[in-house]
Amino acid sequence: MTSSSVTPAAAAPSSGAGRTWAGRILRALVVLFLLFDAVTKVFRSPQVMKAAAQLGFTPREIVTVGGILLICTLLYAIPRTAILGAVLLTGYLGGAVAVAFHARMPVFETLFPFLFGVLVWLALYLRHPRLGGLLSGASNL
Image 1 (spheres, rainbow, N blue to C red):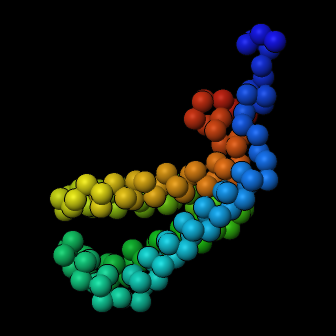
Image 2: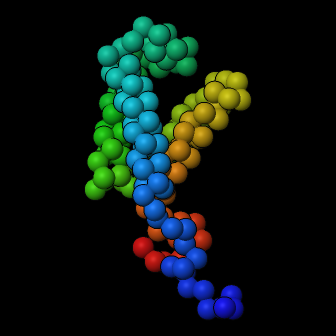
Image 3: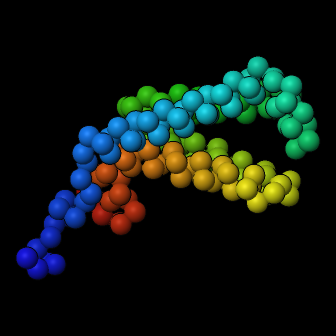
């Protein structure tokens, strides 16, 4: 078999049951963490309010941010809207990186939202390997 006879479908990773379950478990962990984060903002957890004040956010702003995170997370948790949720969460987490960078937070705290964004997309990719075509420029979606 020559390299020219390999089709994009044959070159794509297999989508076995283990891979699908790994994606489901990772998605569940991501959703649980983000829901916890959103709820602590919406319900004005004292620790969250203190940290938000140090970053220059008012209580009203942080509740709004929590509401936005809650909506994005719920969209991500629903299979039919998971890709839209992932796109919106990418924007949200990018904003979190920008805020942390602007506040001159330590490197890990600045990169954590970025790494979490990678987990958001990794969970989707494990469940839907065709998403890999986006990275390679293929249009097989």
